[in-house]
Length: 274
Image: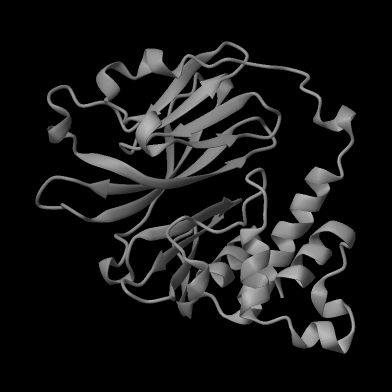
């Protein structure tokens, strides 16, 4: 089986299930798992670190593998001109993180999101802080939540995860999921949607504040925002499935139970904008 997988990676871009019946009969969990393991570091599968491929069924593994393989081949087949560096920007992130108050990037890593147009970069720090950098000016223009005035242990909340949606007028809508750290709300998580814009000095404008997320559904695992709709996936504790809730800014919501992580990812990617 490992030989078949290597042949497929190096000599053909046709999915394994589109070949002869013999090859299709070999396309079981082991084949698709090996496909995932064979991917290069430049194009990992679209799966969060908290989710193990072993929790996915064969159909989900196949879909995840094929999507990642197509992206990987597009990278490897790209011409040298396509991969040539045309602009380089150095961001002085250490200047805004005295005494590692935002977290230790060397130990835990950063979650980076470069927005379309390459004018803004979002950095989610390990300690639960979100920065927005204006790349042209090389300066941090937005920090959420605010740093505490006293000890870091006294901070009221941290940011669990976020999602963004760039608007046609240049504004940026953000889905922020807060977790409160002080009694009586300790452990409670709330979603809010805000807007920031270069034309408005990056001042935070709140558009929506949702009700408390169900603790029994586990930690927020996937968050997506598009138009006036956003979705949050929470993975059940000790279970390979979870709950996907789709919210509308007018207050309506739809909840789907017993949803696998990979299904939730594709549902979030294809959610309607109204």
